[in-house]
Length: 345
Image (cartoon, rainbow, N blue to C red):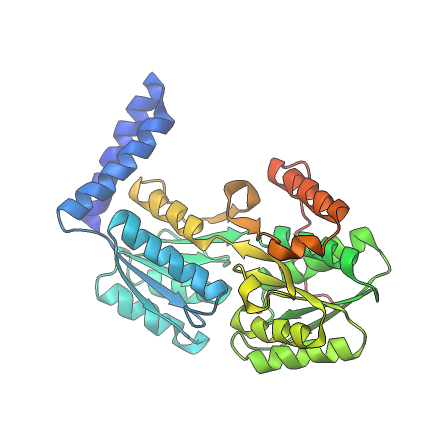
């Protein structure tokens, strides 16, 4: 890795000279691609590992990260490995195992990986640790935060437009800033349409227990809620199933979850983790990596809304137009979705 960074430093110096002559952006892109190609040709593709809290086939948060890992293998010839279902107590040990066996980059997918990354990074300065949705930063640690609240806000607007009972619900997993911000944005979006709408919320305490989310959603449905949203990773699939059984509408999270319940899921707030990992990888190989917290949202193509599919017939045209216009304003920066990571009671 030291040899790699020496090469990256040389590239950075070369880019600086080219900047003075103009055309820096085009040259930077082609040089990065050359670096990756040379590494593959020499059999020195970077070793990249991924740690996730759930299963990599959850059709949600963890699967999107796994697809990002596969992208790095396919696009850059990275040598990859992953560990799924990593519990908080095991995060530091899992990071240590990868760093000790020579992995150059280790991704921890989720806010819980931030502190373990800082702990292990101090012992392995030649390994880069990248955490999504965390607030950790050090010389060899960075956090890439997705502006997931943007999708949550749009889902709230949609829920407020579609409800007939003026009662909507949101199911979350474990209380963490990166998840609280989505729930709060959902509420803010709904109340921008109807300040008097009732927004019920619940935390399951799990990322993977679908039965708990189904229970929480069912309790809301029994009280009159007729629209369910979630940000509960695999656990949230249970909330969608409860909505499906009750014949009400829902939205998906992290991934295009339409296939889970085609007649129930109107759209999904998708987080394009492969784009995040591509940006992070290029930051590293180009010598532009910084120990910082970096925010990426709709304007970078990291957050987006899934297609409506057949549900386009269900959602009134004026509502679809309203959502499209609002999304365009978010992308352009004309409208900033409020970022509130404070737990609301």
